[in-house]
Image 1 (tube, one colour):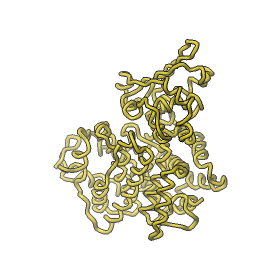
Image 2 (cartoon, helix red, strand yellow):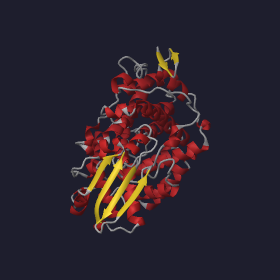
Image 3 (cartoon, helix red, strand yellow):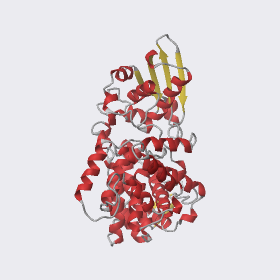
Image 4 (cartoon, helix red, strand yellow):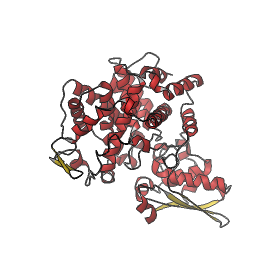
Length: 462
């Protein structure tokens, strides 16, 4: 027995979630949720295509393709008609989708849901021969459990050193795949138990090995397929995976707030609260990047005239990205606040092509980064996570001072990215695709409810 929101229940939490997810149908989704979800699927596919250009996704997908096996699902970048086992496609596509650090997120949970749920949902849909409605529904429901769990467990879970997207991703991916496969409540409950047994993701990659960070959501997507398919065959993961004495909550957080964990399910889907990333870096550096770019533009400041910059922000941003040592790789630069701000000051953007070894070794960027300092600020600390902001004070060589505050980076629901922003980002990230193929892919995703999943995955081969 456990206590949740002031009431006792003999039903395991996994079963409570499963019972709800098994009842929801596509027609239950409000139009705004469908439209948002298509936008996030488009965004995720775009960052996955762009991510395929990077070294770790390339070595991962090439390795997986070399293994052969049962032809079930499409691995991004494969030859037309080639397929691999579903678990391999989910792993490879998930790795590609996180490599740019441009996938969507949910700030109240510190989690990136779509990078785990969409690859799993696409693979499950391709295997099951599903339509686009099933893919949309699976994505919505997978995000719902990830968002709710992440909000309940953080900041404690993050503070313990866990990467929430990796640890909670298996649950979202399992719900996405399991609902597409049509698992009944008892089997989806057991599948969630299996998902928890595969939960993993350590934030040591912020200090070393940043290149391999995408393995977390890749493995999460893979775990979703494996959990759903094993449960379908009768495997029984622990139903008390969340609240059990040695379950997920007790093992992986010092404080879990269960208020509202399952209350209001279906009243409002949390995918509406996801943000879109417009910079190819950790979300915690985005407010400062936005402020630097706006100062540079509004006051026509040449980076050569900048004497110093001070960034005040919230503690989590400093914990993740406040290292003042120069990064040693493009991946590490994504988690370095002074370096990212310097790069934005010089280029006026922080897109996917900026975080490379060439820019990391650029003496001008390094020199400016050395004159950028970042610290915590009580105002931003108290406002977090309702606001994830930054204050930037820029001093030029002639002694003039310029100040800019950004409460929420562009792309948050309160400061939304426009559809044009998302389309521009997609076209930029997929620039290596033939133009006609890229535009056809956009057309399919934006009208996904009238297409099949295979209509989508045919464009994974280019």
